Image 1 (spheres, rainbow, N blue to C red):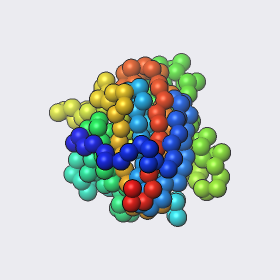
Image 2 (image 1 turned 120 degrees about the vertical axis):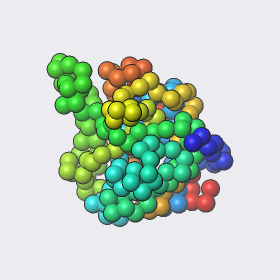
Image 3 (image 1 turned 45 degrees about the horizontal axis):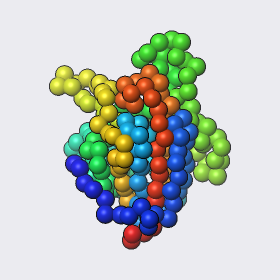
Image 4 (image 1 turned 90 degrees about the vertical axis):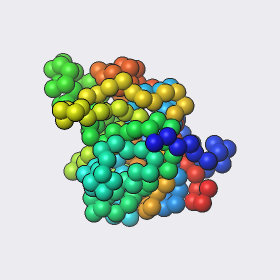
Length: 215
Ligand SMILES: [Zn+2]
């Protein structure tokens, strides 16, 4: 569902450009609103959420899909934790569909999907591991990396039940926005993938903006 934001960029309390291939890890507090902006279009922002007050509680694709009765994420979607609590609600979306089935790219999946010699290429799972290693204060480890959301990514399920990675629906300047229901650690890998048509084989930067509670 396409829904425009009512927030003004000048009122944002935080903004940061995240280049392709880099991660962004930050706590978004309860009541704050996070916007991910696809600066050049068709980028994939692989995203994990953890309860900042108890990181053992984390985003769950299966709970989110079951409770909303829909496999795609868009405005109105409530992103739920593994104990089914609302973590964030998507409040605006100018793309219309985001994926939570395809998972993050990994060196292992790159060898299966593309070719054995892709094993050494940088993948989102590497960025997730680097982020938790460089940010020990959150107390996360490799076992905390679960299934993720791929914002801006178009992964349709076929009538036969297959998954296909398609050209993105996003475009320069499109965005998705969500308001936090708890203090959440947000971990984004801005995907470095060079083998996937989702980003037109051209990873590009995204921008992250945050508005304060009640904005
Ligand atoms: Zn990736």
